[in-house]
Image 1 (cartoon, rainbow, N blue to C red):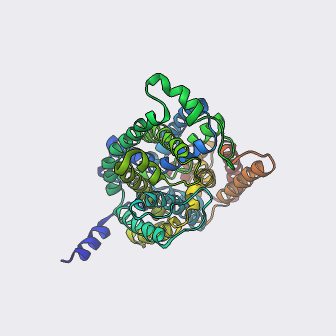
Image 2 (cartoon, rainbow, N blue to C red; image 1 turned 90 degrees about the horizontal axis):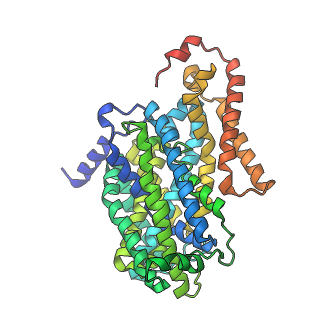
Image 3 (cartoon, rainbow, N blue to C red; image 1 turned 180 degrees about the horizontal axis):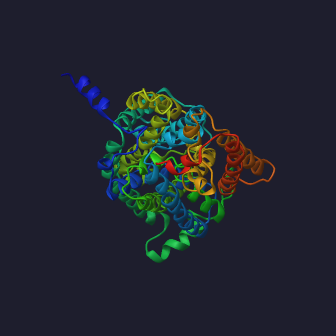
Length: 475
């Protein structure tokens, strides 16, 4: 048997239980989730987001306090929202939403969801490309670049995209194993690189760190053309940067494998290693880069890490990009595959990987990552509120859960109304209230819950649903 045939057989054998609950013998323990979250969130985004806090003039005190509070809130959201729903339903976000909203609505939602995940994974492929391009002297993107600046950049991106896609095609087991191997090494590189450059910043003892941090690293002065970040920006961003995954319920696709809902707390390994230590470490590296390059607008994680930690730093950037892109591509593949269950997940992931790689050619994905991450979470947030409320609250109020499935309908108007009104409300706050995108998720969630309850009451009064159905429904 040829190696190609063997590979195809292995891919055909991958079963991700896209439309059925996870069997008990396939459930995973703590180790799988600790490694997956540590690998995904101690990753390529950290080489971008940490420096962007420096660029936006965050002060040292605001950064540390904002990250602590925001990351705690994020972990609680993963556990008490996503973890509880995922373990109760044992289904993907996409299938659960189809039972609630109908397949016509989920067709639109899944396309939007997959596109957002493709762009996020694409930004991570681009991050890896900045490191791979070092030995070839590729021109690196700057803070103002939108389009690819060379053929070499495109070739490099496609090479990394191909490797990332192949890993994602093998499903959750391979992604989890990859993350468990990579995560411990990556965080050590982050820490070692940051500690290694401290003397070059004038920090030679523990007592030197905070004064230099306040005056040199996070001095509270934004770079030219960048807005000013406060404690509230940082706290809400740390909480909501993964809003699509916890409040938006995308991580149901991962946590449905968990034996207990409390495994959602394993996200702490990701946010406190990645969104705390790694963001601070990469911020230190970028502040040194700004000083030694005399304010260069080049914004390339690869060269920044290479200057601090040599080859190990560059390799860390490559692998960090992979560990974020792999599970993100996996989620995007599941979103597209749910449109037509007859499609093989690995084939869909292959297609999604191609789209993602094309998107990765455009550096603007990296340069606007703060805004993009906040936007994608905001777009997915209302449907997360719908799922949580539908699973845990609706039946207690005398209404039917899984409305589309129970009525055999293709579209639940209550869900569509909730999504549209919630996003219009958030857009109005942004345009007319002057509230920045980082702060919109919290009021938007409560609006989504209220609208969904009212809309469900109105819609379900017009439907004939036997009372017995409410108690017979099983997840």
